Image (cartoon, rainbow, N blue to C red; front, side):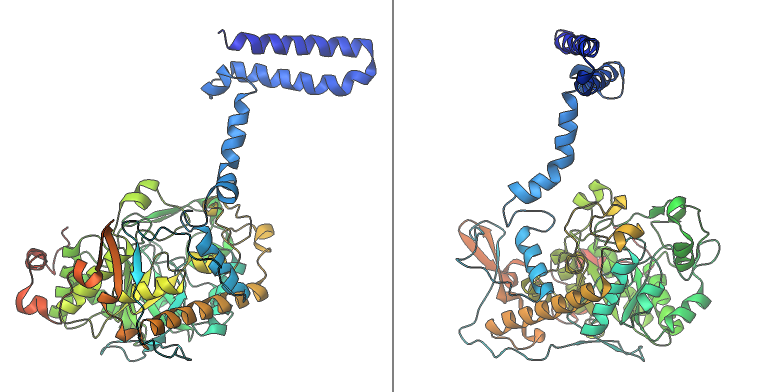
Length: 527
């Protein structure tokens, strides 16, 4: 009460002064009205019951809310250093922006990072560097059961749906993919006209909601799937099992957001809330998953088919490998999404605590396929904070054949990491359905930026590999990536991690893998 009384007295004095001023001269109205408004706010703060802070500190408590609202911008622009921002630091964002604009991403005077911190990683330069390749290599996607293989670029646009991104953003990404000759993953929100109109190569992603190929009750519709998979631009089809930032949970699209256009693309009723369950209806065991992937490939006319997951249980993935062996078929590709991957919205507990980071996930999948004798028929993609040439090289060293980027591609078309993707108020028009905001994305200009960013990043990766004495990704080896494990010790990935040899699990599983391999059941998912 002692803290409230001075404020109340101040308000009373202000009101008295205002009344006196009005009585004395009409010229004081301009001062009296604001004072009366402040008094009204103070009284409202004292009697309201929602905010304890305002009941104790009327008027002054609003300053706290104002500063809290400004905190992200103050942090990003005035406080954080070039190398410690999250999710992407300023150095990384600047590299993407500069490459997208076609300017040099060069820095003077040396690194600002502490290279002696435990966890720091280093790529090893060679005393005999190689000439830099003038033409970027491509990755052939398509196993023995695929009749229409596809040559994938080393860096592609990762999954982002129309609905989470604006129409102009999707158009810019796909136009950039067409211009640069790389692939664009549609995300699970359906195959929209904005994906198809520019003519870029597409990886059509199917999620648990089966948007664009679903029955009225939400099941998979093979007829619709076959019809849309036949599009010339659809080069591959991917079944999304889980996403890095939110593995194992579904999603809800509120009815008011289901516009006529989104309803048409997703194949759902307009204005009705749409649920994406956390599980698939088309399979419940590893064997059923492998069989369904084979069915998808058949329905897609022999085009490459794969699945995307955030790795969790190694035993479950080994069960899928056993199912591949027993069924005599396998997906053409697997995309590993790291727990550090992005999303429009996710529960913080999931984003922070569920799923393996990309490096561990990649090495798990790569080694499992190698050990099961399947690696030569299944290509592995990597997604999750891939933004620079060094990121790309590290992922290739950890077991990937190619990479996908989502947020870096968003930076290329103007994203400023405002982190308002879930509010529909994206300040640059990338992650919004607000037409007024979306018009900020100029498709012609931004598509050129996507093309330039992808080309420059792949060239950077090739320069790094050449400096390491490698002229092709197939020449990269785990011993070429070092990690500081403590303040005094540096070890290579070859020393830190176990790397299986082809067919090793079938012959004699090594210690550390044997129990999981033995327990893996192709007819049951069990962590």
